[in-house]
Amino acid sequence: MSRVLCRLDDIPDGEGRGFEPDDGGDGILVVRRGDGAYGYVNSCPHAASPLDWVENQFMSLDKSHILCATHGAEFRVEDGYCVLGPCRGKSLASVAVSVRDGEVILD
Ligand code: FES
Image (tube, rainbow, N blue to C red; front, side, top):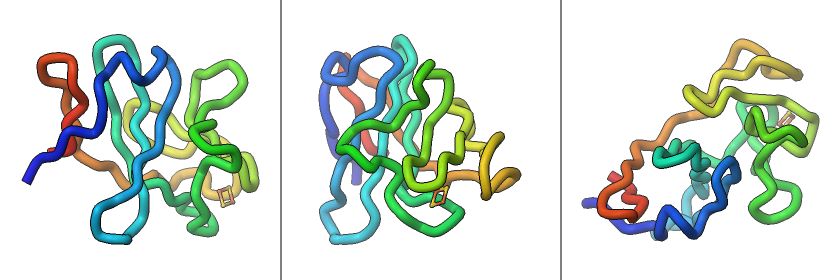
């Protein structure tokens, strides 16, 4: 069943936002790039910690990559692939999200 997470405009372009699950499992994060959104489980493939040390701080300084604040791994926004850090070569688990009528939908 799909669920509305927020309005796309609630996420500043180039930033991410975290969401807690309904079922008590891992949270998810959604990163906005223009009119698009990318969703991932908020759990680092290195040590399974949440990526944001500070709530909703998911991006590297230059906002080019998703950053794990625990040990500094960086992931591509487009596919969650780790390009730098201790879990290089692994990937974040993707979560299907889409943007419809200006709302971010968890599919
Ligand atoms: S837990 Fe993410 S880099 Fe170590």
